[in-house]
Length: 140
Image (spheres, rainbow, N blue to C red):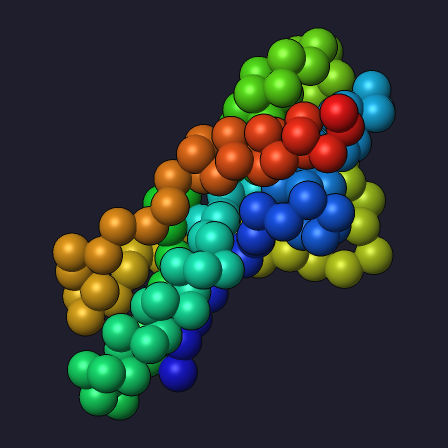
């Protein structure tokens, strides 16, 4: 069994976490981001690589597959900075202010399984740079 936090990819137009955030900011929209929404955004390719690694190691336990923890607010600010968006487009708030019709878990800070020791997850800043570059290439 594999436990995951938030999974994203770096495919322009996919609508996943980073793609949606960058598109929103590029369109000069406000990105509302909770400072207390802590999660471990993990690239889809890392999830696949880690699952294969666990299977090859005959892992038969619960394994966490997750990159380092980050707040949604920090991620939104990082995205805005990456594309040169106005920092004022990122609206800081608390989860309770989202007024969502569902509940979210508290901070999700998963430590990667010890069976993944030595594996290097894609840094979310690098992923943002890849996606921002891909988006810029499509606009030309």
